Image 1 (tube, rainbow, N blue to C red):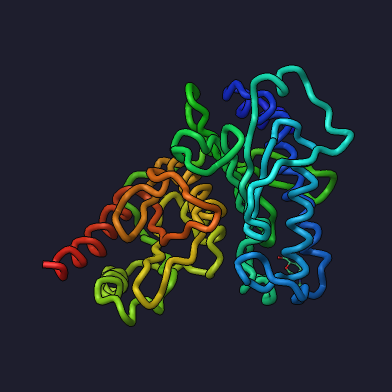
Image 2 (cartoon, protein in one colour):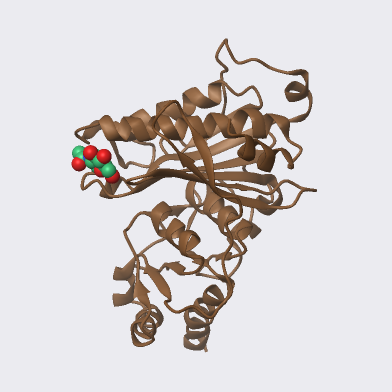
Amino acid sequence: MDRQLDQLLSSAGRPALCQSVLPALLGCIADIARTLRTSHTVALAGTANAFGDDQLNVDVAAEKLVRDALAKCPAVVAASSEEDPAERPVRHSRDAGQTAEEASSEQYTVAFDPLDGSSIIAPNWTVGTIVGIWDGASALRQPPAERQVAAVLGVYGPRTTAIVALRVPGAEAACLEVGIGDQDFRFHVIRSRVRFADPPFATRYFAPANLRAAAESPSYMRLITQYVGKKYTLRYSGGLVPDVVHALAKGHGVYVSPVTAASRAKLRRLYELCPIALVVECAGGRAIDPVDGEEILARPLEGCDDRAGLVCGTTDEVDEVKRELLGASLESCR
Ligand SMILES: *[C@@H]1O[C@H](CO)[C@@H](O)[C@H](O)[C@H]1NC(C)=O
């Protein structure tokens, strides 16, 4: 692995996580990128995942690549994914070496969405992979803010990149951006410290997901109108990963995906929201639930299918959205 990357990760004091699990996942992102580039068609695989969503051939291929990567990591004891959402023990491949250290002290559960953005794959827009890494043998019924110790976002656009966030108890939180080359998995650190910047900003960005909800939510409609009135710049692709990574690349911005009675929560907390929230927090931002304003990482998961909305980005912007959306709903209850 790249020496600088190695150095940045080694400060976490988790050898199996940093020398086995994270490198395996980065290698897997290179593999998924190659699979996407060489899949000339994206088609229904004729199957549906456990949530009833149709699966694409590329979803199935990405799922298999992540599972194969995890099978090589002895420290990963359990895994589940959006395509197969039940936590199960990981069967390790025979060539998975195991050091005494790994066997004794590090055990992880991995939760992943192998390919996020199915609806925008066919037009060849940027899509992503989302991975959360949890301490211990399960991600469920644990305090996410402490137990989810790392997250990786793979970004498949014209370039392949990854955002790696690490927040291990006792070590400083880190968030970095890695470039992934086509040839033999060359990684190099593009930015060793991904951080949201401080205002003022010449341009302000907003990503209004679930925009249809504005038709039945006066407060969301008002928020959008305010962004337009204040001359914010729209940056929204419909892919959760590229939309959040846009803000990380620019150093500011806000992503809003509200929930209304008719437009229900659809983002999965385990496979999408928790890893995204860790990345955003490690970059100095905030990620909250638009229904109650609570931090995404505040509440333990009850099951693999828990869902919610999302507001994330710089702290100032997220607080403003919270005031707009929740302030109004409190008034209407009076
Ligand atoms: C999709 O876009 C990538 C670059 O982003 C390009 O290399 C690839 O050829 C495109 N594939 C198709 C089928 O258009």
